Image 1 (tube, each protein chain N blue to C red):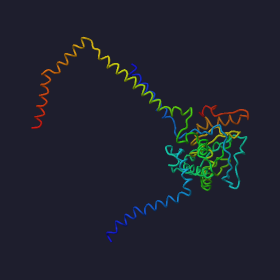
Image 2: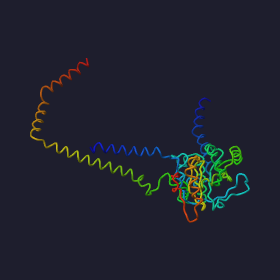
Image 3: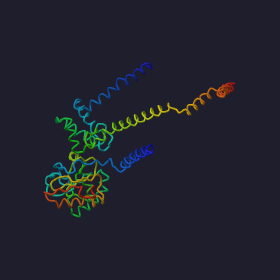
Length: 190
Length: 176
């Protein structure tokens, strides 16, 4: 009996691992930045290059940082949702224009609508590296203390927005300096 | 003139062509010693776009950026462990081509040896079982012994010899 059971158990074990492997997405590298302070940066604004935006100025507010580029195809598909989000006035969305030509970027926004309070020019991608960006688009949820609470890898989908990002943003907005809200408190973010 | 031609071809192949390559390599590297360090560190870092390559091997834009970042950091005098820590802080352990020993990666490191151990144990147990079986076979009952003798006797009977003749006859037929 054991002679037949052992191979069966080994087979089920291997099959179990392979099945789990099918569900995993190797492209989704968990960000080590979750629950860590967002790196500080200061960058020129896309629409007024003389003016600088400093990430420190956002302390005290919950905000989204969306990494985008005019050469990025997936950004195009995600953008209408971001435009809708910005019209709803729930949370300020800032854009990090990653390794892009500012002229192309401005044209792109003119064509598709501008979802951002402000877009910041990261021409050389240095801030992108600082934030561990390895693909575009990526969206960071940053809390009032300047701590990254969530990162969406790839385009934000309506379901990710409704089930994770927005509930998390609401919780973070209600939080005081003493209460810590982690993304694990929102079911849809798991 | 025609006897000169192979000479010219050989000259081009073995003298001029390598010169051209040497020049290109020289053009790429400003400080060979530093570039060596940069390459060593880059070979430890995974390219996150093309995940089975190191950033030293990859030409993806992100890999090139990260290589530049490594070069900048080497230039400013930071050590290899500083640079790798900087990358791990941003991209997680995944960025390291050789995963670190940690509680969460223990199975990865120990797993192969664990499997080897299981294999050795199974092998030893089976071998012991088998020798035990062989030894037991030596102790036959009287009845079995009698049967064994009968079978051995039958083997040397003329019937078997006849079969041997038949096969040699057949072989002879095939030859002719």
